[in-house]
Length: 256
Image (cartoon, rainbow, N blue to C red; front, side):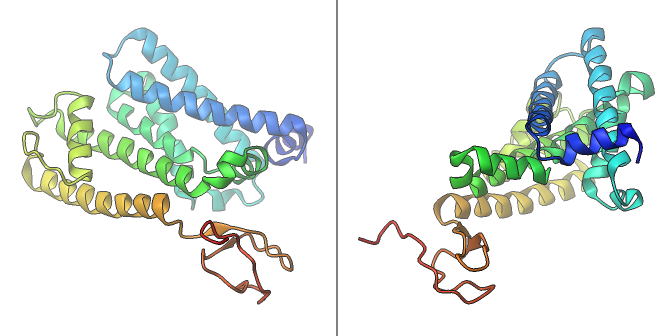
């Protein structure tokens, strides 16, 4: 292992304070990138915005190359959806170089958000608020990512041929009304492909909203460490640990 690879591995996978700060920095970068994607999608394309795209694209490419360099099984990385999402995002951020047609793919960068296990572990260790609401936070992030991705797909496939989809606001409006099954009908997708895309949005939307509501009002699992085996997550009404059978005493808000 070269010195550079060892340093990268220490930053990406180490347990030092410097490594923790570095991974928090990556999380902040992902969040800033997400905000830039959302805000820039509603603005006209200008050289200044395209310059920022290139800078972010180079940063994402550097991060991707570093992750690949420290991977123990590099070819297996290409079996992960997030790897291909990163590659698509890199191409899209470099759109001023390879062509603006791929620009909408930049939204796929959001699939990386909160997907790094080291970051999740550190958030659990550092933030009691995150520990108490982990399922809610992840469910909301997943829903937001899905909305952003579907909005981009709707815009990319419809804005040239559908007069109802003139900008990202129109695409976002259609996506949200379809996800919530409100269906005002003032904005519709045209053609067989548009109808099929509408069906996908509505079916996935109903599933995601039901899941989010369940997480908000009735958590699927609660976090309570088993005193014997250390298993962290159990059903809310569990009496025994499903891993080792130890009797649990999970606090119940309704108990005296």
